[in-house]
Length: 68
View (cartoon, rainbow, N blue to C red):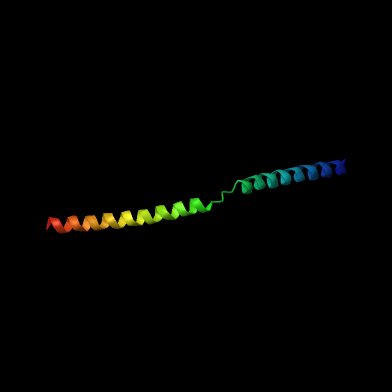
């Protein structure tokens, strides 16, 4: 009887481990990899945001000087 208990526990444990490994494999399979086009677009948008920030700062300084 003790042998069947250990056998059942071993099978249950291995099923749980296999389920977890399969689940992790699915997660890693859907890991997003970016194309060159997407990377270039992100870089362009970052540069554009930087330019917009500089413009807004300059515009703010210009208005501050004009109010004096």
